[in-house]
Each structure stands twice: as C-alpha cells, then as structure tokens.
Image (cartoon, rainbow, N blue to C red; front, top):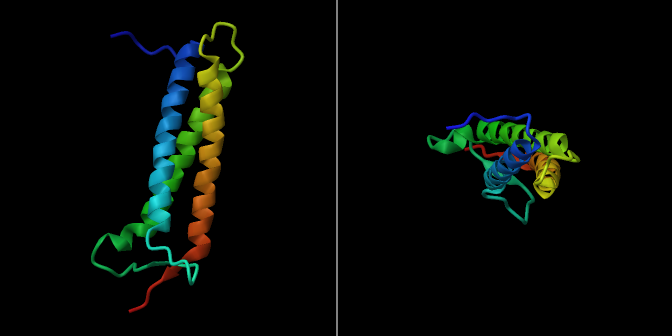
Length: 125
C-alpha cells in the first residue's frame, strides 16, 4: 500500500472532500442532539440532567460534537484552500467543494451551539 503524500494537491483535495463529508455528518448529528424535544410553543429545548438515562450527558455531548464538527470543518476548509489554484491539481472542483463546505459546516456548528446555549431549559422535578 502506498503512503499518503499530502504534498500532492490531488491528495489534499481528496482528503478535504472526505473530511467535509464527515463534517457534514457531524453537523447533522449535532442538529439532532440540539433540537431533540424542541417545543415550538415555548421556544425552548427541555432537558433533564438528573435523569438516569442518556439525558444527563446531553450538554457534554452537544459541546463535544460541536467541537468535533468545527475541527473537521476547519481541516476540510484548510485542505481545500491549500490545494486550490495549484497547476498540478486536476481536481480543482473538489478543492472548491471542500473549502466552501468546510466554511458552511463550521458556521452551522456554531449556529447550533448558540441555539443550544440560548434555548436550553433545565427540567426541574
């Protein structure tokens, strides 16, 4: 098996595209974790941190997933930006897609994190 050579712009474009796909999946999971149980009438996201189930880990899960999504998005955007405009890069479209998707998913992760911090409501029993 050949070693990965990140000096080649095609390799950077390919890995930028794959990390942007992973960032997109992470943002989808983050959106689910944030808006699960969203109440439209009161505009709140209720959660119970004293429950015996997985609800007690929900704030930590949201924060960790947001951090992973932002990190993957920044890596994807960086790889796309670094390989963009190289004459030897035959996959310029992949570089553009990874750079723009990285920026989009980083913004979406931050928006989800702000929505969580503004709309969460601790349920008291």
